[in-house]
Every structure is written in C-alpha cells, then in structure tokens.
Image (cartoon, rainbow, N blue to C red; front, side, top):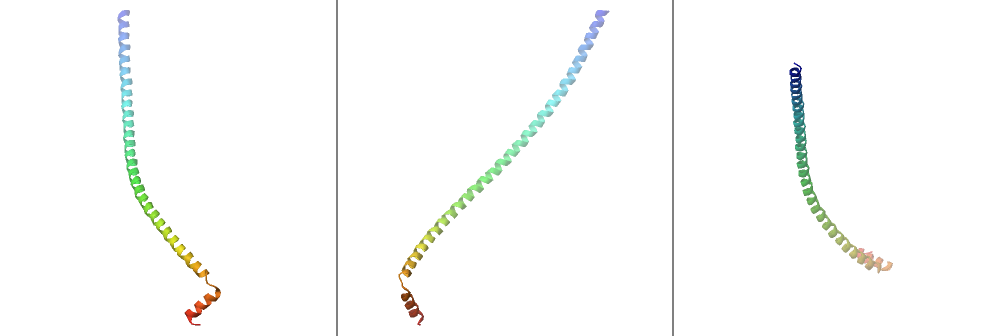
Length: 117
C-alpha cells in the first residue's frame, strides 16, 4: 500500500506541477505578446514621427533654396546700388573740384550774371 500511495502522491505532484507550469507559462506568453504589441505600436508611432519630420525637413530645405535665391537677387541689387553710388560720388567729387577752382569774385560774378544784379 505504501508503494501504491507513493505512486498516487507522485502522480498528484506531477499533475500539480504540470497545471502550475501551464498557468505560469500561459500568463508569461500573454504578457510577452502584450509587451511585444506595445513595443510594435511604439515603433509604428516613431516611424510615423520620422516620416513627419522628414516631410517637414523637405519643406524647410525647399524654403532655404528659395530664400537663397532671394538673397542672391538682393546681393546683386546691392552691388548695382553700390556701383551707382560710387559713380555718383565720382561725378559729385569732380563737380566739387571744378567749383573749388572758382574764387569768391568768380562766384559773385557768376551769380550777378545769372540773376542780373
């Protein structure tokens, strides 16, 4: 009877171990799948964010290209304006040097002739 009862106890222990192992691994598998799904969702979210940032970057790159064109046009305009200013300054300096050649009597005579006084 002791052998038979030992066998029954061993079978009960094996059955309890099998049931316990089943529940432990089943819960772990469920937890694993839940965690895996959570991580996959986060990856999808990050991929969507990456696509959004890439799109934004592409738009900003196009803005930079357009603004670079505007800067080049403005730089050319500034260069043209500086060239005109230099030309006007040279002409003004020539006129001033021509005026400096006149004496006070020459200037008085000029205005007297011009305005008749």
